[in-house]
Length: 139
Length: 139
DNA sequence: CATTTTGGTAAAGTGGCTTTACTATCGACG
DNA sequence: CGTCGATAGTAAAGCCACTTTACCAAAATG
Image 1 (cartoon, rainbow over the protein chains, first blue to last red):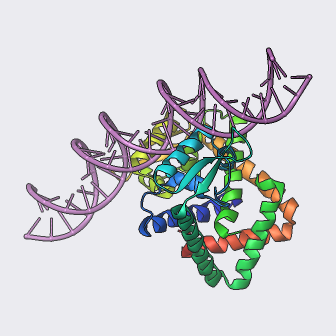
Image 2: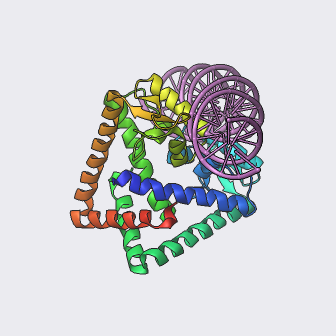
């Protein structure tokens, strides 16, 4: 079993679970593509272009997602105070609520994995993944 | 940093790299959605419906991908010998070539990570991910 | 101040996925 | 053996996300 599949499968499982639990928990208007915006570390105080680059998509595509989430009441796009042409995404109360819910869900996943693997091994896993993340390989 | 991001980011990086290297290596007609078919453990000898379930999409969507890959010469859809209504996907020579290329790319990634982390830690990482995969959590 | 670059927006086009609907085959049961 | 429900696959229409192309405004460059 190669590393690609070993990372992809649990990552997908977590993604499906987040969507399902958000939809069941009062945020039934969120769809898979919206996750590109809400992904860690979240869009609050960030420029649209930066979000686009993070998500690996065009600025236009990101802008559509942002307009959608703005219409649904999760965020606003305000003019940046310092630079005339820039804008800043700000989460609304509802936006902060959904982000907090996502953190909750993920912490639930971590508790389950920790029980399954043992706390020591789970910590080890996270540390190894952190090392990968810090290295330039994962970019 | 929560486990969702720690798994997602390297998984995405690997995905991007696979696409880029395949496109640069003589398979420039493959797009991201096609990866849903070529994903481990590969489509050879498998029924369309099974592939759809693996990829987490409808049978119709999978069928469109299969038709696309058939038109590009990567696979064929033959009638299953045992059951009249079933079909079996078979990789063509070109299909096997691209699958082998994907394995090559992933082994390259594994070598790099192994160098970066150290062989011992990399093996440890894979073993932990295997444990997660074997447990029912990752489904 | 003119030119280029950068951040963002807008609209049309493309393509992938879902929904709805259908055919063919298999298995179970009377 | 024949009917009926379930299963495997296909087909077409609609929707939605993303790209492409084009554009405007503000900043940086000279």
